[in-house]
Image (cartoon, rainbow, N blue to C red):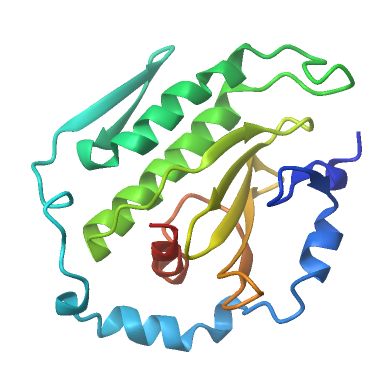
Length: 202
């Protein structure tokens, strides 16, 4: 199956990457994020006071998959639950979609949930914000989608497991193509303007 057609859209269907990106002609490039960088550099903590839910003690939740342990702050309990439930992806065999879907490599799933955990922790610690858990969905080409649709915005990240020196690609907006954002990740280092934008997923 052509990998270009294996990207889940925000409505739960499947469309081409080209079609998805063509629908957002005014996408903001990474180099144009001066506004976000300025906001990050001069972030005023008084504007976003942590709620009692966010200031409880930091107990770690451990998720173990065949010896690979992923730890999450207890304040990210909903994300931990979603990660636990997504373990079924590792049990899918070739042809799980009744067509030509690929069996999933454990490394791809670990890359997806580790990246999710890393950004969720960073946003929590830097901005006192708990983002909502995404849907963690298998894609027939062997990649994994992290998909959010919250009251403030929507966001889709497709994880490939660092093949061809690319870990993931992503697209999001605040509906009606407001503040669109898209790019690719070549590693799991935190991109600050991306993390700042992802506060909209709370």
